[in-house]
Length: 345
Image 1: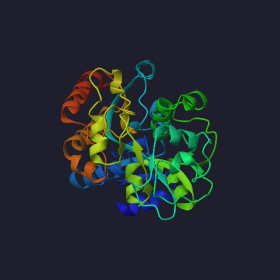
Image 2: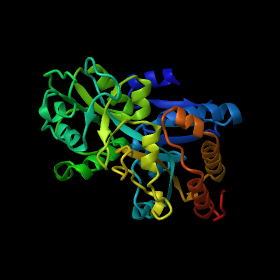
Image 3: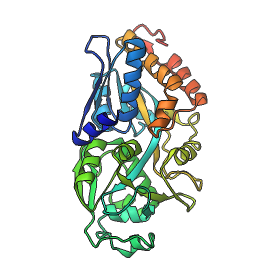
Image 4: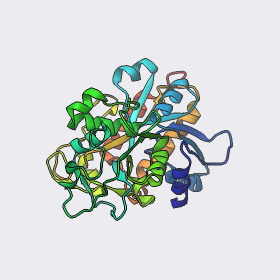
């Protein structure tokens, strides 16, 4: 798995093929945020059942386009679609995993989790207002840390990205100026910086460029031994990105009352809540043209919900709670049908 991630960091837009290429293999595309755990689940599921998954890690925007076009069995996006869009395109949406997005830096002598940043400071860096690591806005947060006078190179996503949506949604909540000038979305007009395709591409650029800062899903930062930062929580406490702070943020999600399960969990209240926490959502067509393939996708996801929790924790994700899984599987029964209108689950 570690080798998979190292390869992914070099090759943006990586394609995950955890299967032989026989006709019954499931196909999916989208979120790079979910790639590390999806790869692990697919590997173990293949060994357990013989059924394969071919997943293209192309970014949430690409996943949304492909499921709408009907070229894959499911799409995966870290930005939930609204109820009107789901209805218009005949789609069902539900969360599969949660995790955290972290800021990562390339600075000499800095250890992972050592540097402290606040949301407004991070926003000003991405607005191009803070351009030096020696800026007082950064050094005053980090007494005792020796920052170089180097320029800051901002790295962002170049593709349509759910990770970008979570990152920009958070910055829009904590910085009125960022909300006005950039806003939240899977693809935005960045004021400064260089782009990378996928979490893999951003990670590779940050590792390559001295003095850079970027944002990736935490599994990419940890497995690639990158220097990630602390962030100040909604309630004013500096927190590390880790299982407990992701879970603290996830605990505030009210799935039952949100249409299409479309919860956005950034900037959640709580002293220990990680500020940039979010879910990856699976998108499927309500009417399944190939009911047997649709059922295979649901069997895989059911297996992942019930057997994949330990693997998720190992890779620093947060599993969907059993009570929410019950809601999701009830939605499968009522919403996913074959061409004749018969439930496939």
